[in-house]
Length: 388
Ligand SMILES: NC(=O)c1ccc[n+]([C@@H]2O[C@H](COP(=O)([O-])OP(=O)(O)OC[C@H]3O[C@@H](n4cnc5c(N)ncnc54)[C@H](O)[C@@H]3O)[C@@H](O)[C@H]2O)c1
Ligand SMILES: [Fe+2]
Image (cartoon, rainbow, N blue to C red; front, side):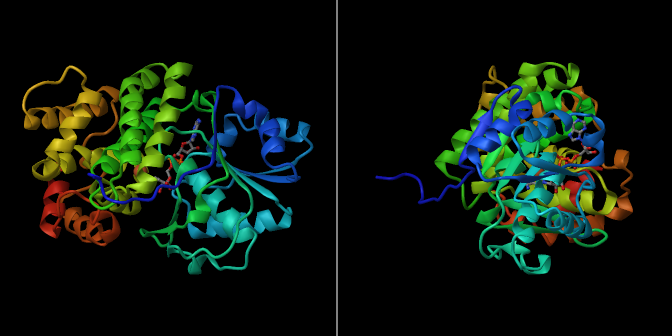
């Protein structure tokens, strides 16, 4: 007898997890995509400034592949950024797209691969399953250990002053993901912390996802949480700790594989309006509401949180409720130790903003539907008030 429901599971077929692999990018591409001749490397100005684009670009050239660097991606990419990037890809006759950056650059790379090779307009692909046909070959190389976008089938675009839209389609799974911690060595501690907590949230929310929780996502979420909780503080305290950095990258990717198949819920639903309206980075927005959503979920999710507490706080003991509470406390402690902002007020949000935030959060119906406990508008308002 099965004691779990039927499920489907998809992920990226080829994964390279190897220190120094970015410097050998040309070899990996030549092997995996022997006909590729003109690559578009998609990144943002901040990452470009680190100089870390040079080695992978040189390695591509050594492999006989022409490289164009597109470095105009901005955080939480607006639609126009995507359209400009698609134009650049077409002008250069791009035949392989390589995302090299955080979630913003990788999301733009996904959309270039879909739009540059086809004739769909961007407006036609928002939503679930609206991408038609093939895309250009796509390789993803994360430089933050956070979103897991290198292995997810989602791209998020800022469509208005404060609104975001998602594209969810199987074509957004890359052909290859390459994890090399050398690219993340210069990531500032606060960004390391916020993006790492985002990855932990992916694991926690996948593990408690109401509709699509499945055994494969569970295994991945548990392993992800173990790696992330054991290495996040070390990576923040010593950014040059390569072992901790590589463990973080692996943990973030495993969490991405988990939540791509067992989707995230109320933490993300309540975080999006904070990011959209107040331009707070994605990971920090999640971190600000996380403990308060976890506490709200306790009546419905204490059993699963208790299981995760045993991973994050191995010495935990006591009743199910006590262990679940230990997970909440541990997540709060991680945020405290890293020194990132802890309250909505610290990012400029006032009491008078909470009604609008609650209204906006209720629009995230797809995410709220995955939450282990039903969230009403009053609940959302109360969670924001607790986070203030
Ligand atoms: N597709 C998905 O599955 C998914 C999931 C969650 C979030 N997202 C999206 O991803 C975006 C957030 O991505 P993110 O948190 O990775 O941040 P990001 O890509 O927006 O980058 C944040 C900042 O970090 C800098 N940076 C990145 N790597 C660096 C490095 N190695 N060294 C120094 N600086 C570096 C960048 O220059 C940038 O200023 C949002 O748009 C969010 O909506 C996507
Ligand atoms: Fe996230």
